Every structure is written in C-alpha cells, then in structure tokens.
Length: 141
Image (cartoon, rainbow, N blue to C red; front, side):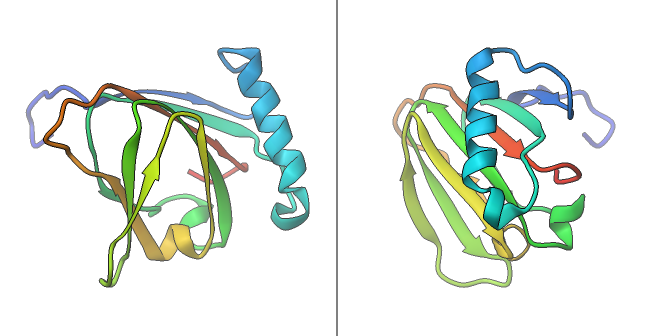
C-alpha cells in the first residue's frame, strides 16, 4: 500500500465457476442456496470466496463486477466468533447494527449491494477469528 509492503488483515481464497471447493459441505451449501433462491435470482450461485478475518472489516460495498450496476444477490455464511454487522446507506443515514453469529446466513441482494456499505467494527473485547463464506452468481464480485 502506497509503495510499502503491509500484512493483509485477512486471508483470502476465491473459487471460480467449476473449481472444487475445499470441503464437500460447502458444495452442498452452495447447491441448497442456489435451489432456494432460484426463482428470485434466476441463476445459480457459481463462485465462492472465503475470507478469514482476524479482526474488523472496514466499510465497503460493491464497486466492481455486475453487482456495481445490477441488482444481484450474495449469500454470506459466517462461521467463528460472533460479531456485529453494520449497514449504512452510502449517501449517509442511520447505521443498522445486527449481531452475526456462528452459522448465521445473511443474503444481501437487490440494490442493497450497490447503495449500502457494510462493516464489522473493532471491539474493545478480545475477538477471535471469523470466516466469511460468500456464494455469488457468475460475474458478481
């Protein structure tokens, strides 16, 4: 960053369409979510991203891929240490805080991914790691 080498605050893995996932249960989850959301989504979840977060996650939202210009869906499975999820409209407004526990699923869709940002805030208490597993349709990043 800015001509310096820094530690990445998370470990990342991305599995493209057709690539085997690291565990069969993830394939089962992706297939079940694709079947459940087939009528709304009109296409299956084809890719998966895994992020091991050691701490917080800064405010961010979609700015690349189809999700930056189209209504799309991403199904996110959270495993590990429970944390709060913050959501806020990009143009300002009230922050929505929701607990996100081990095994919780959040599906972000419609214009939410384009018009809102989300974050996992820092905490004063010791917080363990958390893994975010994101299932996405083709072309959605």
